Length: 220
Image (cartoon, rainbow, N blue to C red; front, side, top):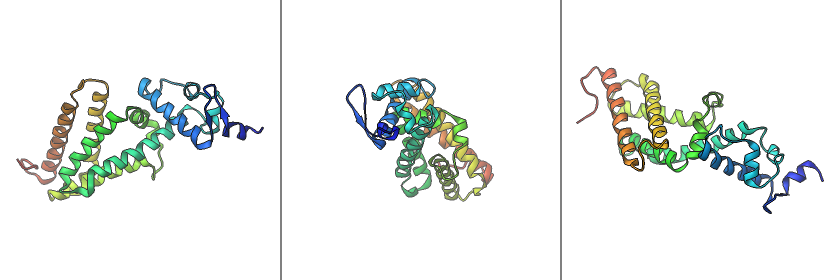
């Protein structure tokens, strides 16, 4: 039996039979659970294999090492993340500011519902920096920049500050999400959402005041 056939239909200790895609997805699911429990650095490829019920050699048919497994999981996470945030944005309706606030709420909801994916996505700054220009991770930030542009346009402000505003919003949202996942809000997730909405409003207000040279950018 060839090595490829061995990995295509290997039956593990728990009586599970895996084929190419099924083993890959099973390993991704195992990594997702392990990262949720221990963080991105808290497990080995051998542990993922053990959790699936295959030999320690089996994962290497699909992943060069643990980092490759995490990178694949992060890419899947960003694809799902983009879908969720895209639905929340809903074409910027009824206005860009309201839609941006929904995006923030959807961001926190994703982190809360998928802690393993979220940690895989944002756990390695170097990996994020190495992402290709057309990657799902880059798309997530590019969409945030476009959202910031839409908000600035809504208040007739110059668009040149959109990228800086997007970075501030992302950093703030990520910070609130990390505090939430670490348990600082306990089960009061509405407090995390309220803090994020207030923080985003303050960032946008400051950006508009700077761009327009007025005392306050936001109404009311």
